[in-house]
Length: 323
Ligand code: UT7
Image (cartoon, rainbow, N blue to C red; front, side, top):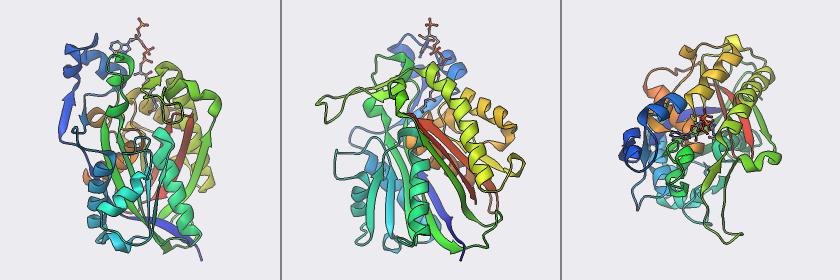
């Protein structure tokens, strides 16, 4: 028995409103040129006023279910990675469950900020390998526009809203790195770095908060830790950098993406890049990039894909999977 959690469907949803960099020039001391050259971001999507994270997540989930040829009740569990759930509770995942009309199984959220989707994939993989679920709907969904301080030019130009979803299904493999599905995971966190990236408010402190980031400090940790976690996960899978077909990184900054690829010794033609169109969508960025990468014809069945992400906590990690 060599059970593997295999991706059998994927989809995404982006809110209608597209905001180009130039829109910030009217209210902030910034330029399209600064945002492009420092981050690689050209535009991002913002949710409509009445549109919530679970709304985005549900639309992405429907696209993934359609791609897999499944109905909601064919799924045993929903795991939503988000730091911007609609309400303090219940979870965004149970809201998605209700919106999909799913009347069985279980649903819960995972909160690891920008590393959230990697943590959610790891959790769903564990549910499948332990026999607690056969099919899991894994979603990354965020409305980071709701936690922006619109007077802080160093953060508010960087983030966007969106959602991506995939179906993970238990299948028998041969126990070799040639199997389809998740081959290895590496997760890390170090709470000593909590002041580098956080929201300065929340329920227990009875305040409404906004995202705060020491961008250049996070940047320094990012390149080093992302290359390291990707290498660790690859080694755990019994694979090497030369085996990689696609790196699908968290989309925070093109300079971090390029720096990590360079440190890993990989050319940029092996990297799926969507940061120019989405900005940083936190836990949604990897499933969005996977879905866009597949629809562009970049990621194909049998390809070896490495996802890696870092964010608030700091929390970071990587997943190696064969598509
Ligand atoms: O997703 C979670 C993980 N997050 C990340 O990975 C983000 C990591 N960090 C970054 O992407 C980059 O650090 C930023 C894009 C946030 C900033 O780039 P940087 O090259 O690290 O710039 P910096 O923070 O060192 O700032 C350089 C200058 C500063 O001015 P002074 O102090 O040199 O005069 C900033 O005040 O750029 C200024 N600046 C801006 N100027 C125009 C900051 N934001 C802006 C802006 N427009 N929007």
